[in-house]
Image (cartoon, rainbow, N blue to C red; front, side, top):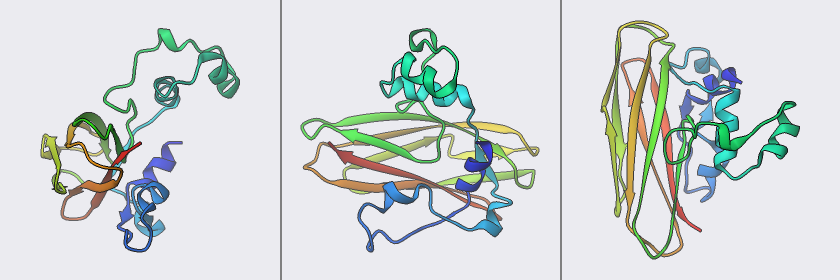
Length: 185
């Protein structure tokens, strides 16, 4: 499964003009297999993280036990960190149309590219949305070093619609995109 996330990190932007639902369809971007071999950053996941996420999403232990082949008790598991309880490149915030909403996302990445290196966050905040990232730079002294960041997304209430934003982590060799989709239910 880790290889799957390895490939997600190396992405090219797609045009939303062609498909309004594109953000839900393609994840972090189009895959460039040649560049994915050396993606720069990897969002780490393991089996437990997926189980925590599925518990957070409302699946019960008996359903998950069938999937994983061993007993699962969601009430005894620590909840995954952040608003969505998963360490994934993309983030989604569901708004109630009548009130402002804040989501705090926690992400951890591993440097699989060159080192030492610094990735700087470029943030796209559309009107009505405030996005902050701390820290705004990830400094890696060695390969396979892990760094964490916190993304806070504050969105004003809105009529039924979808807003697409994102964070782009850049260093001289790599561009790693983390899309943020904000929508009403």
